[in-house]
Image 1 (cartoon, one colour):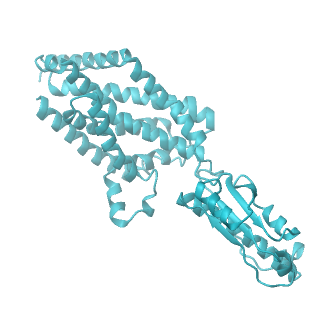
Image 2 (cartoon, rainbow, N blue to C red; image 1 turned 180 degrees about the horizontal axis):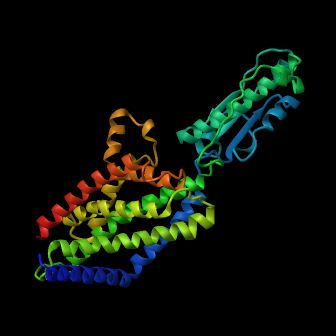
Image 3 (cartoon, rainbow, N blue to C red; image 1 turned 60 degrees about the vertical axis):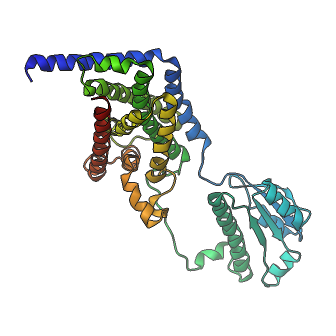
Length: 384
């Protein structure tokens, strides 16, 4: 290829990239959707979704009505629990659990205070709605800690070692260090996770939609009879959509997550954007593959969901890989998002460098290169 040929090749690529930007700017609905996804959607995920037990509806049946029972019930306080009243019978407790108006019921037997005072064993009944297994586990664990702590205090008091004397007892001093998110702020995790999911959705959807739109309008045939090669038709779509997604990512970080939720960026932002661009570029191969199959935008939307669902499930964003069966855990290594999530959290919250992330970057490059190559192969085969 001569220098003149190279200049012509580059000029065609630049003109086609400009065309893609102009087409995107004329699509007002898509622009509004992109802005919403990178701002309002990120804000809602960061501010409205929590992984903690929050004001679990608790109802009690206090058959003792003593100072001891009131002291125990007084420990079920917000933000974890919310006392919603008393039950008249066991049947009402089951009815409340069935209709969802209560998440936890607690029955205190008669003679509760007298049994404690005389050193007899006593038992409480706790019923937990575990329809949501995570919240059910948290509710039962927290409630068991409250009841266990109260029972320990009563036992020590009866042994005459309560109050200030308890400090003389042998104890295990468990000093916990919480790193990278000291306050365990769910907004940081949920906000970043949602941003990574949105980036993945658009990395697949936008190139595919741009290509299928050409099919629907019949302009792809006009481009194919022009001097342009299939690569010069396809590549500008990937470049322009990558640039748009990077702009959206900057909008989310600097307009929502940093000022709105105090997200601390401990690593290098240029490194984060560079690896995000690489991830978008390589994941776009899945969009190109979808574009070779779909005939209209509706089919592109359905194919995107079909591709995205296993990617999200295997990424570890919703379920930690350690909690998956062994065979499913191995499949997480074929999800590009699995590598990108570890890279993004490593840079933003842990301050990791490119050298520390090298194995993850290598994995993302290998997998992304294979995906992009497959998408390019399908595109060339159909339009070449």
